[in-house]
Length: 77
Image (cartoon, rainbow, N blue to C red):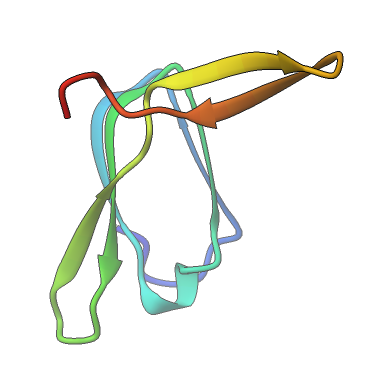
């Protein structure tokens, strides 16, 4: 749980984590690598948190000689 303000959160080689952010940390940059089942919980202002999954699946295409990567949803969801 982040209680104050942080500029960056790094999650690496992790299977399953829940990161609770404070109001002060909503501008934090979240960097992930080789991880799965990650959820970021954001304060709702009522003392509760809303849960948001971090994408795990990506699609990369070649466009005009450049790689373009976007998030994708798992098939069947």
